[in-house]
Image 1 (cartoon, rainbow, N blue to C red):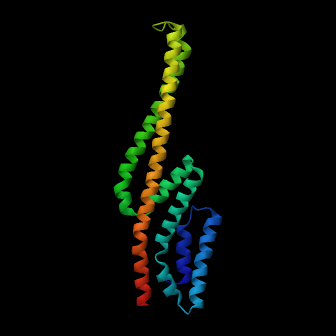
Image 2: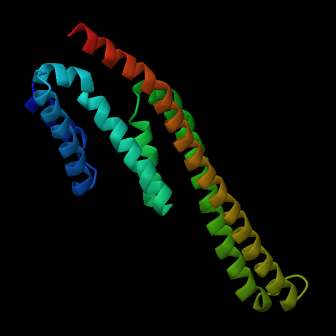
Image 3: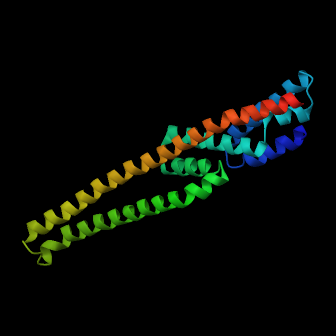
Length: 195
């Protein structure tokens, strides 16, 4: 594989990263090719030593998503980290995606229920005293307030569970990457020895 082919595949794989981050990564890999040329290696040897550019791009995007999650911890950063991690391996997607979608669907359903109970508590609190709520107006106000407070507490617990889920997925991705990295390094070294 030539330098131009390697760099174009890497650049295509980095689509979606911030422009400056992608440019920095591409500059690093250009430097690898320059260093290899200075050491007397061909472009094909350097490309083989660097590995598959598509795989590199997926790993770099996953790492960027994880770093963004560690810095921001916002819903969009969480989604970015989840999707970047899921992009690491097709087998992991086949195994984890159905489980993950089930868990995410359940959490989303609970969040919708919490919001509905919160608004129902508000309706009970406001209209209960005038609608003849059993126990009178004070009981209606307290029941509505209790529903709202309970939904806020459950919502907070769901938020903590969601953060744990994202952190667990990031941990799994790091473990996955650490397990694959030595194997990829041995494979790259073996290819470099054959050349």
